[in-house]
Amino acid sequence: MGIQDRGVSDISEQRNAPEVRIEPWAEGDLDLLHLLNTPEMTLHFGGPETEEKVLSRHKRYCEITGKGTGRMFKILLLPQLEPVGSVGYWDTIWQEESVYEIGWCVLTAYQGRGIATEATAKAIAYINSEKKRSFIHAFPKINNPASNAICRKLGFSFIGEYDFEYPKGCFIRINDWMLPVSEK
Image (cartoon, rainbow, N blue to C red; front, side, top):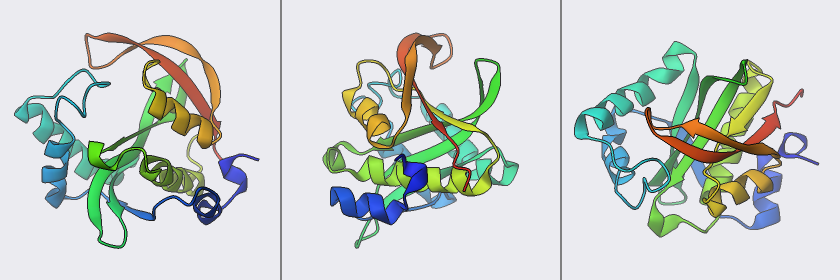
């Protein structure tokens, strides 16, 4: 039984994971984006971005929902509502098909506690409610065991290894994980 067959609360209970909330990315979340842009946090993403690129990314995160091309969220740890990361999904073309790509990032001090898994499950629930695309893909680097484990935990199917351009001009080796959008 995959995630699409269970409620998000069922998943939380099964893993005894911390409670998280995801909220739409907003203008006031620039400080969180700066915390997510350190060398340690961007190890699997090509390194920190310039201030100009961070500001551009922040603007895209704030505007994506209104454009109808995906959603970006901040991850809040309950009960303190402490911002601890981001999760989101966006339209992309993969293997000549329109799909959603999903990605997540949790601050180092909060990693290893199931926060990214819980937040990503909540983002998948949004995708399932929209039913805009048939498939969700995640593309963690092959040497990122934590992100690859999240894909397995959430019921994604491993498709294979590929070369992937990210950031632009830099090719990395990634695993392609795919999850069908729920029919419910």
